[in-house]
Amino acid sequence: MEKRLLELLALAFQNELSENERKELDVLFQRFPEYQDLAEKLQFSYERIDELELAGMIQVEKEWKKLQKKNKRLRGQGRKMVFLVVAGMAAVLLLAIGMLFLFRSFPEVEVSSIACKQEPKKVTLEYANGKTLVLDVNSLVMNDKGKITDHVVAKENMAVAEGLRLNRLSVPKGGDFSLTLADGTVIRLNADSRLQYPSEFSGDSRIVYLEGEAFFNVAKDKTKPFIVKTKKLDVEVTGTSFNVMAYPSEAFIQTTLVQGGVNILTEDGNVCKLLAGEQCAVDTASGECVVSQVNVASFVSWIDGQFFFDNESMESLMRKIARWYDVDVIFENEELKSELFYGTITRSDEITEVLDILVLTKTMHYEIKDRTVYIRK
Image 1 (cartoon, rainbow, N blue to C red):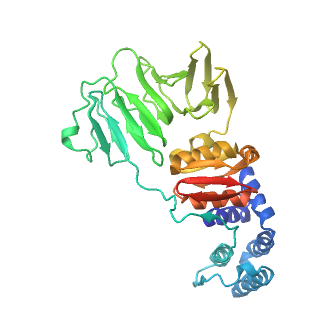
Image 2 (cartoon, one colour):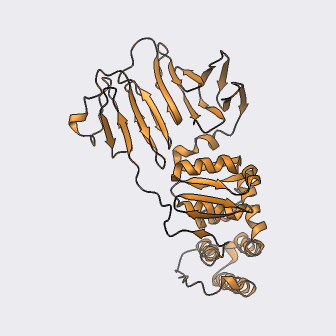
Image 3 (cartoon, rainbow, N blue to C red):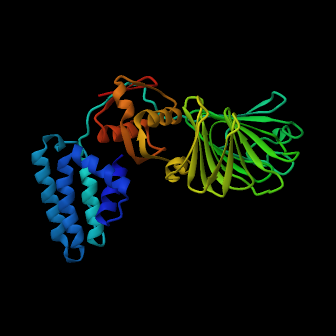
């Protein structure tokens, strides 16, 4: 969390904040106005960086002491700030900003003695003949004969898939996985997802079955369309990059196109055609298909290890967090579910760091008991 706040201030100083990042920083300043006051003084120094020498460092320290006097909770935090001799006032200013976060005081939260820390998750590959392989790797590559070529997998398992019709790859909560199919198509599966696929593609199409979420970079083959089948719809392409989210817990199945073109075929016969930058959202109850322009980054950022929320409801956001951190989430106040959130969070952060960011930006608090997160006002 400290890194994120520091990043926002650094971007602000250089006039490089995006609209959503500016909103995120504004919300933080509304919650902690004393930080905005210090940031404005640091900005004044940053704009005159060429004119500053050691005096600039002294001024920053003075401003920090003033802030300490105003906010008693910033005193005596037990952390030491060591100033290094660095070249240039830019580095000095970054250290000064860092001080703000080292001595910060955020709202208190209740966390049980059993922390919801990420633990290694095991991906399983179930072959069509019933044999199951527990994978200790985060990716697999199939050659053109349907054999696993990843050197980490034991040799005796390398030919098991050969000749079998359909395999099932299961990615648990808290993990993701990359699979390269025999045709060269690369599939990245998100947490709590399952993919069924053949060892080798035969016939006039390439068909896989998805439950959950996956990003597809499909190898081009105009003679054999690639088809992703979900519970309510099929996505058909010949070679392109796109993301499909089809979790049973979600009200919509979303197909987001990064590049190329795709056809969406719903179970009631409707066909939706997508262009790059568009998304098709199919209502799983009514079958209605809505195509719209979207910020693609917010739907595919997970493949780069980020949560990117763009005007997303707290309810939707917490479902993603629950899948990734393998926790249950209970809202004690229903109105919090509709709160909207803008921002970026790193998926490698501990769950408490992620929740602390939400506490900063919304009028909410949380409590963790065992593996359940309680959200309340």
